[in-house]
Image (cartoon, rainbow, N blue to C red; front, side, top):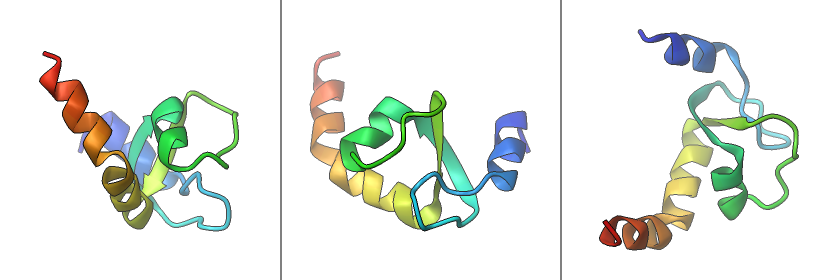
Length: 70
């Protein structure tokens, strides 16, 4: 287990009303693209498994276009 995974295991999901255990921590600006109601506090936003999946689906096209620019 890496140090970032250890921190992710102890923090709750950043989405209001969820509170599930986080599995990933992403840049808050990236998460706000899928969840605009997210608060402004902190640089990173921990997400639970369900919200990470929703983020992936919501940003799939934009991430694919970003990869094409390389």
